[in-house]
Image (tube, rainbow, N blue to C red; front, side, top):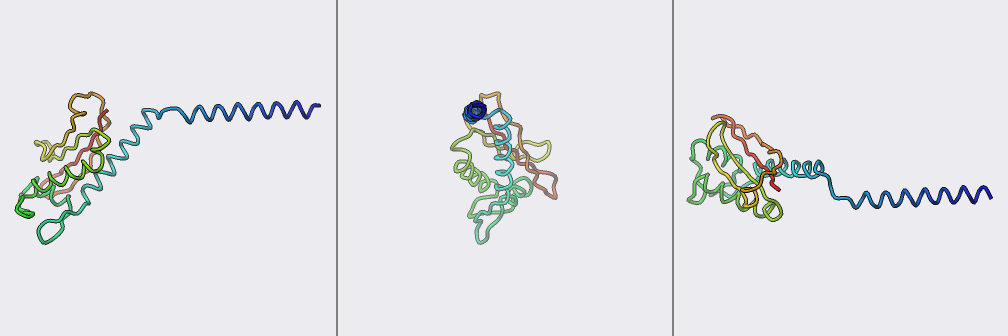
Length: 154
C-alpha cells in the first residue's frame, strides 16, 4: 500500500515537471536572446561582405579592396564603373538577398571622422528609435582606418 502511494507521488511530480517544461518552451525569446542573434548576424555579415569576391574586368577583387579604393584613390575600374559605383551596386544586391528580406538595417562605411563613403538605410530604420548595438568590422588601409558598421532596427 505504501508503494502505491509513493508511485502516485512520483507520477504527479513527473506530470508537473512535464507541464512546466512545455510551458517554458512556448515562451517568446527574450530581448537578450534577440540582441545576441542580431549581433551574431551583423558580425558575420560584415566579415562575409568584406571577403566576398566581385567580377571586376578581367579579374576578381574582394569587396574589401573596392572599399579601400573607394575611400582613398578611386583608381580601380570595373567594366566602366569606378570602385564606388561597383561597391554600391554589389552591396545593394547582397543586402537585398540576405537580410533585406526580413530585417530593417543600417549599413555605413566610413573613414575615421569623415563623411560616410556609402550608407544604406531601409525604410524601417529611418523612423525608429530601437536599434541594436552597431557591429563594426575594421578594414585596414594605408591611408587610415575604414570601418563597416551594420545595425539592425526594430
